[in-house]
Amino acid sequence: MGTQESDEHTGGTTGRRALLGAAVLGAGGAVLGLPGAAGAADARHGGGHGGGVKSLPVPTVIGHRGASGYRPEHTFGSYELALDLGADIVEAGDLVPTKDGHLVCRHEPEIGGTTDVADHPEFADRRRTKSLDGVPVTGWFTEDFTLAELKTLRATERIEANRPHNTLYDGRWEIPTFEEVLRWQNEQTRKRGKQVWIYPELKHPTYFRKLGLGTEERLARLLRRHGKDRKNSPVIIQSFEPTSIQRMSKLVRNPLAVLLSGANSRPWDFVETGDPRTTADLITPAGLREIASYAQGIGPTLDLVIPKDSAGRLTEPTTLVRDAHRAGLILHPYTMRNENPFLPAEFRKGGDPDAYGDVFGAFRTYFATGIDGVFTDNPDTGVLAREDFVNG
Image (cartoon, rainbow, N blue to C red; front, side):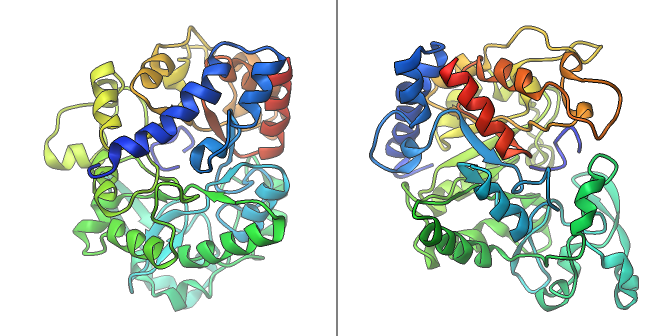
C-alpha cells in the first residue's frame, strides 16, 4: 500500500470476474446478511470449493506488508510471521525496480526510511531530491542502486515512533527481490501443507515507465516464469494506477485490484494523461462497472467505506460495498492497525501513540459493512476479530 495511504482486461475478463464474483455472492453474500451460525461457517470457509479466490475465507485477513505491526515491513521475517499468525494472504511486495531492472520489495522507491542506507558512507553521494508523483522527496532511491548494492543494506522499522519495539529487529533482514518471494511462496506452501497467497503491489508505475523501467512487463515475465500468471494462481496484483492494472490485464490472467485513495484524489496516471476524473468518479456505479471490465476487485481506503467526521469519529457507511458488489467486484480495504493514532476516535484508549485501542470494536464495525476482507498490520488480531464476527 502506497503513499496514497493516510500514514502515510481484455481476453478472459468475464471468466476471471465471475470467479471473484462467485466469492462475493456466495461467501461474501452471507457476510452481507450478517449471518447466523450456518452462514458464518460458509463465510469463514470461503463459501465453497474450487480453488482460486473462492477458496479464501471471507472476510479475508491480509497481512499488510507481512506482520508489520511486529516486524520491519517487507522482510521475510515479517512475511513469515504473518503466516504464523494466521493471515490468509501476505502482501509480499510493494514492487519497485533496481537500476539493473530487478523488482524488489520496499514500501517506496525512497529507502532512507526503511533501510540503514544512511549508515553506509559509500552511498552518501546517492542521496538526492526527486519529484515522485508530483511531490518532492529527498533520500535514496532504488532505481539508483544495483541489486548487488541493495543487498548490502538491511531493513529497519519505518514508523518507530509508534512501534519502538520493532526497532529490536533493525538490521536483521535484507531487502527481498520479488523472485525470491515467489520461491519463498512455494517453500512455505510445501512447509505448511496449504497454499500460501501473496498480494503484490505495483508502486508508481508511471514514474518508473518514464525512467525506462516499466514494471508491469517485468512482473508479468516473473509470473510466467514461475507458472503463476493464471486466473487461479495464488497471486493477486494491485496498483493505485488504473491504467497499470489495465496493462496487467493484457499481460496475465491473475486476479487484479485497483487501489483507491481519498475521494478527492486523482490517480497519478490520470494526472499525467490529463484525465480529469478523481477517485470519487471511480466509485460511482458507472466507475465501478468500468473497473470491473478489466479488474476483479478494489482496495479502497477504509474512509471510502465509512467516512469520518471532523473529530475523527465514524459516520454512516457509504454505498460503496453495495455498489461494488453489484458490479461484481470484491473489496479489500486498507489498513487496520492496533495502535491508537490509526483507529477512529471512538475506538482509541488514552493518548499513548504506542498503546492499543479497541481494535476489535473497529474490526466489527468495518466487517458489518460487508467488506470481503481487510489489510491489517496485525494479522492475529484480524483473525480473532473475524472469529468474533462470524460466530457472533
